[in-house]
Image (cartoon, rainbow, N blue to C red; front, side):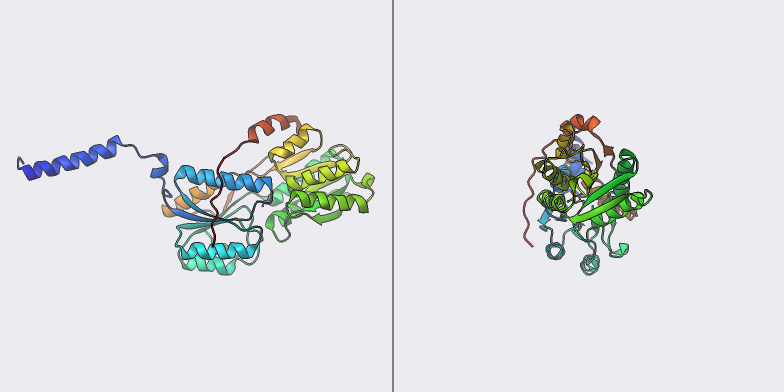
Length: 334
Ligand code: AHR
């Protein structure tokens, strides 16, 4: 026992034990995703909500010590497919896809699965078989549409001519919100969508669409604008004001997202209700991947919930939501 070599060996072991007990690991380092690489294919930056969502996922990854390969698809599915193929070629540990549209994913998801790379679908849905991805983290878009219609039905006593501003055609967010909204107004014989125009979830497009509608319809016949997101609603608000009417009073405004600017509009009496789409989906997505790497079985849908907001809390919501994550995505070229 007193042999110098044995003493040296024991001392070395004691030193290692001391180091591992004295030097704490950070919570990020203890996470299963620490220093793993995840490819993230994002839709684009068409709305304030989308920008907040990107910033939130990057901030969450940063906190957990995850390396993100970020790809902005500029609203084009072919860019997303190219990015996913490039992530596969680089042998990333996992892939997160926020799909622009629902269809056309089967082939590339099969390629990821064949390479043993787990995929999380985030926000919008895909029509591909659910066996091709690990899970989907998202809100319930149908429910959002139903909430918007239920609020409008009670605000107008079930009598309203509605202008609908649609999100990206082919996206599950637009389709499901429309389904939910129409399901509810079908219960009220005096509620109908008199015009429906696409605006791609973009503020400027919402304004342009509304300007056209105000020219083709008698503005006095329009009771409300139902916009699939707040950005298009804000564009419509500008068009209504320029037409000499008072949005929020002459024409009611209801939309989805709960971005800071819609609360500003409410504070000015120009918007009436918004349904929240929580942008903080990175946490549940990374938790699901961690659980997967621990060998656990993951549910195929991880819902993210949100409430409905009105002008009475707009000032406090505006103050609490107006934040800056300060993280700029590092562009990734496939
Ligand atoms: O897919 C969710 C939608 O996409 C958001 O409501 C909209 O703002 C975004 O562009």
